[in-house]
Image (cartoon, rainbow, N blue to C red):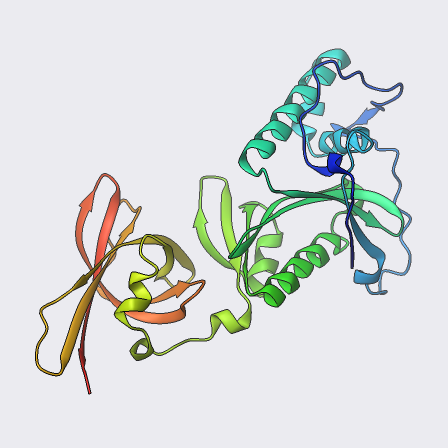
Length: 311
């Protein structure tokens, strides 16, 4: 897969002007609530490697504006199927597109926005934001004719590869109803959190997933990660975010050191005290015995106590 970088500053996501005028024939006919898009994907031998047929180039605005709106419309069958006249649909679709563009620009000011090109055809878009410890997948959208061909999976895999090469975690959100959830789980992703409609999924390079011995972690390791987020697997299939809010040193005894960790997790009810798998992007994976010690309007607090012999 080729990643083509644009040198044009307009490549950054920006909102549309309310004065935007749709080009002639921009909206085509609708059938069964879905727009018939002028882009026709002529598939070659599907057994060929997809990676060599996909390119990602940075968006250039306003040049790519019409394409992005057309793509957005293809994802909004709920609006195109409404029993209203075409002028109302146009206005509603443009308003929704503008709202999404402005929201992304505010939430992800450093995002990079790519056009997905498959066999020379522009078939979708991909947005990511690269941060110090993670790569955030913001949006991946493809025209209906380009879905279920493995294009999206190939793009996601390329982000896995980048995360592995740079030692970062790949984080993205996916609709619970999306059939690709099972595929992502098979690819090694885990469900880190969920809302009423979406899963927050993460993928980590194997070198970050190697389990480490708890004995190798010191109090200073946790002190330097105070107020950072840990992933705790309170259930085998799902991790919950928990903030390390306190590292306390207990009373020292001869040839013995002791300290405790206090985590805060936003849960309605506490889980039982027992050993849980814990992940941190810098510390790796390890097991902790956690005890629920209290609940407040901010969540449930869990404590882990360390007592060790000192040579």
